[in-house]
Amino acid sequence: MLLFAGLLVGAGAGATVNQYIYQNNGFIVIGKLDIYIDNEPNPTSLDWGTMLPSSTYYVSLIVVNKGNTKVTVTLTTVSLPEGWIHTWALNNTVWQINESKSADLYLIIPADAVGGNYAWTTILTATEV
Image (cartoon, rainbow, N blue to C red; front, side, top):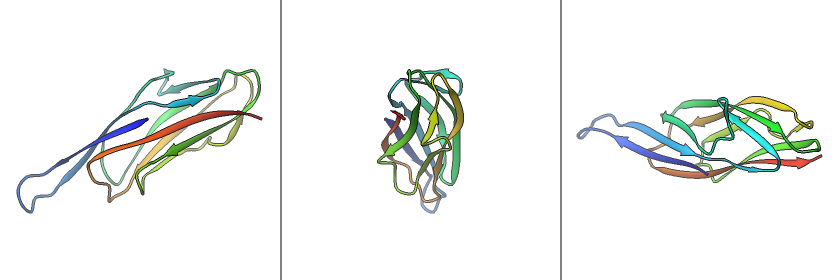
């Protein structure tokens, strides 16, 4: 589950409000896959650091098919805040046995994002072809 905790910072009436979003998350992996995020093997969490509205963030996501058959790997995101985009160029592609592929996993935060607490689930699934 990807967990976001936001913090709104401002000073006095009429002050400009700076919006910061802090994050710590984990992945659900279904199937015989190894994953690496920024070269960390099979991580249990991912720290995106401080995030701001109107920004795009990415990490390198490597997936290795460790099963004994070729598979289609899909990345799905459930309950992502409205207007936010979570995308991966290798979604719905086929992996051969022991094949490794890499592409950046992007998180795009819209301009109207506000500080707050956010939660959604990201799932990587390997389905036999």
